[in-house]
Length: 278
Image 1 (cartoon, one colour):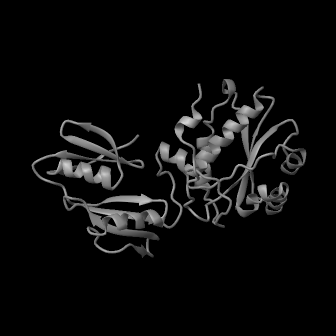
Image 2 (image 1 turned 45 degrees about the vertical axis):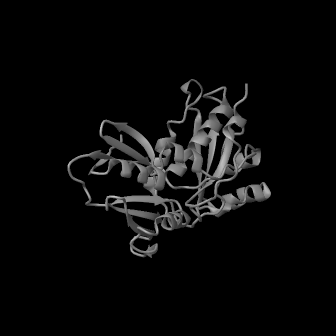
């Protein structure tokens, strides 16, 4: 479920141009004398009325300081001051105002936050993470992560996949050495997770296991956690260390933890038409 915050305005067209063209929001809905913007998973709207709401503040937050600095450079003329670091809340921020004098804030959380990306942001922003903070993942976050992952699709709804949490440091070190530099990220995280599938429940071991693994990687990012798909871990020695039956399939073993750096630059991607073939 979602909600919308509405403001009364006397300057609908100026507001439209500012939030679409300058802030970079998307147009979610327009009808009659109202317009609704979308920014991440936030919906906020304006309706033409005989007075304007100017109380409160609209806050936009980003994954990195560079984005905040980018908007400061754009809005320097209407900013109240330069960006600064707030030690109390561990945020990097600056304040400005929209064309109607309404306060707006641009900020970056200098710590992990969860469940703030919309679906598209989640899909396009997820990256492989190879360096992690030592921060222990709270039990309630792990609970919510695995609760989300139980909805991963499987062939004929067999629900053949399962997860093994690995927190034994000696085992993590062994796993990180097994494939040289490719598996090194495992030792950099506080825990790792093996995503497996059971042949007693499905004839589609690889498909079920890999779907569950990708579901897990996306769900982890949703909760602010980094992962890295370590391939070629479906091996007898790995299964022996983890007490996994030899006929079970190990789709991947991924490190899991809070990223050392929250912002990872988007790699160059080919254009959409490259991926569509007749």
